[in-house]
Length: 117
Image 1 (tube, rainbow, N blue to C red):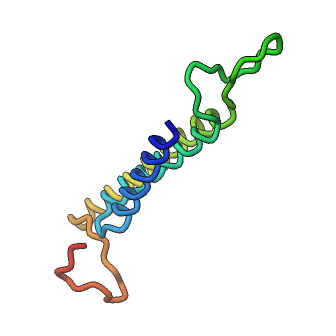
Image 2: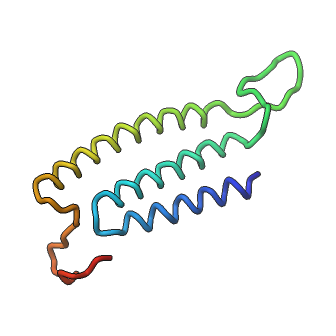
Image 3: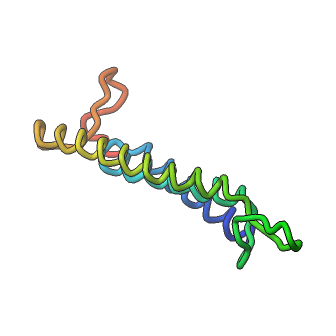
């Protein structure tokens, strides 16, 4: 199970970084979301990956349990990332409506006009 979760975190991170490096605003937003999901899965995995284990201690018997703190952190991170994604989407939508293009222009002249990375 650990290999599967580690692979999922790696694939989400790689895809997110690839999309962040694009020169259009909406793939950048999707890339930030994917990196946020990767961080959430990583945080969730830090609380031990167990099935059918409650996130509470039982003082009367020894049962396996998972740590509830990463679960609370992930819930908080989901809410924050949803809010930030909404703000960034609105900023990108405003930029698109004002210029009719979502291309990110470099001001220092590193890219040619026809470069579509």
